[in-house]
Amino acid sequence: MNYRSTILATFILVGGTASSNAQDIDQSKVPAAVKTAFTKAYPKATDVDWELKGANYQVDFDLGKVDHKATYTNTGKTISFEKDIPNAQLPAAIAKSIKSKYPKGKIDDVDWINTGGKISYKVDIEGTPDVNVWYSADGKFIKELAD
Image (cartoon, rainbow, N blue to C red):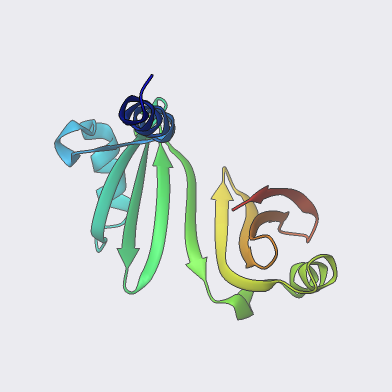
């Protein structure tokens, strides 16, 4: 395999892997039940972008100047909802745990997540290395993933 073929194969492999997780779709391809549920719940949403994630539909949108995300089944049932929140709104127990576990890290972004009525927080931490961590509403550590 020559250099050019190797580069092309690498781009195809990386692109295929990235697109297997989620696929941007046009709003016209979103089922009516999903669009109806979304519009009813968020009539003032702006900057709306849809993705197909497996069999579910995820929508990124803004309400005011705040980023939001909602995930729906193909029948329009809400699976989860999340929104960016200011770092200051992160519960104190979680902030304390992060400071202890990642003393050199800096909280970059905080997402409040509601999945079937269960609240959790996703926190992006810049540091060495950058990580995303999840905590339950009561401050219990759930998981960490490299960013």
